[in-house]
Length: 301
Image (cartoon, rainbow, N blue to C red; front, side, top):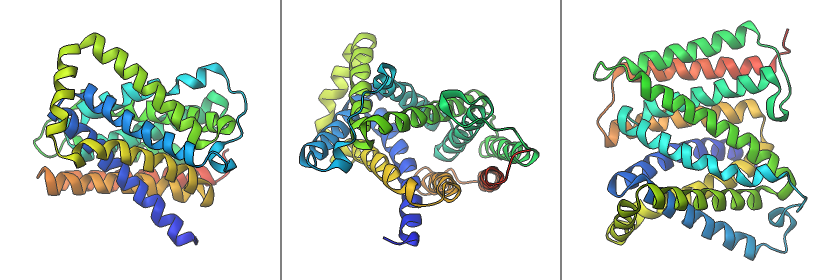
């Protein structure tokens, strides 16, 4: 596979992430968010279990099998918070603003990791270009939030940023876990943790609604029910496969751009929420992300 194909697959993954978030949200609206999480994790876990079973003799799938720190086995718990935050943000603000705030949260959290060296990340200083790029991204979110119906959904933007920060944290932990167990086995464990957490939480907090939602699921379109879990597996496998094949600056920019642009398309086609401020804000977001990523390639002062 040549470089253009890797770049295409990376951009496709970003688009799939946006579709996955919206699919999970729609399924949650049709039943409950708890049912969406439980069913999607069950589907993802089933697919990954089949991959591990069929590929048990392949080292690339089986993984190194090293002993990992105990806390990495609980990385899947982040999924419970992330899915719920994404759900409320998409419902309240639309796909494009929700995805933009999430991408900003990922970028901001990665900056914290860089500045502090937390979780084993390489410690770096904040240069002027990086600070300016983050400011441009922030302005883009403000423009997007102040458009459309004229409401400034600050609370839900904060939830979206938090979802992005938790997503980045989970990605860092999962990457660390994968160095011990391999990408497929680490993801498999994360699905187990997320499913167990979802079952315990939702059957304790809203047992009746969860049972009713599960009972309603067979009457819903198969694509709506299954897409979230299937797409989640695609994202996990594709990122673990592609990220190491192309420069990180291209990968991160393609993922972010594809997520935001696909979200704009989803809002326009399916929810009739397109507006000029959304487009302008998205362009500012992308410019800020591009500047942020380019500054990462330059030596810090």
